Length: 210
Ligand SMILES: *Cc1c(COP(=O)(O)O)cnc(C)c1O
Image 1: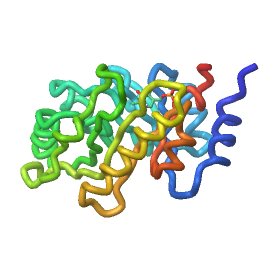
Image 2: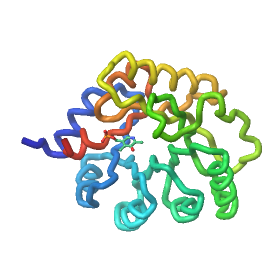
Image 3: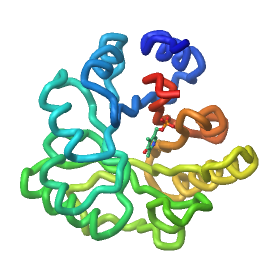
């Protein structure tokens, strides 16, 4: 039997260290379910598609902090920028440049995370470690707050741990004070926390899709 969203949130909260931010991944879930989580006190929600984020952002409470976690096309930057509080999935210089340009246009500094690719699957997005930028002076309207990454989709705990360790070590090399280290999803967030995650992104564990 499914637990309620409120029970799921309480269970997750009881296992999270105080320094770890819970982001509820609400992609594919209804505004009603998001409102339920909101009523439990959650304020951080993540979407992966612009066309899903916009109607939700317009219809749900204005103090929700919306995170963007999907592959973002440069031509969608303008649509989402007014609503988003942290773009976690910046995976190319081209996108960084597009965000900077649009942020300048609306005169707003935008928080972002650089997405790194460390998983075994080639299909996953993100910067290769060797291509990760570390000089952001050309992007004054972009505030690089840290790193986001995903582990290989596998049951092999050692491989998952290897990925998270790598992501956390990259964050330490970015030259940012207290970098946000966004890693860990429903199946692997305990390992991510033990490897230094400061933000976890949980969808199915919160919204009962398993
Ligand atoms: C969907 C998604 C999540 C949440 O995954 P769950 O397994 O449902 O917790 C986290 N991060 C990203 C980037 C996602 O696309």
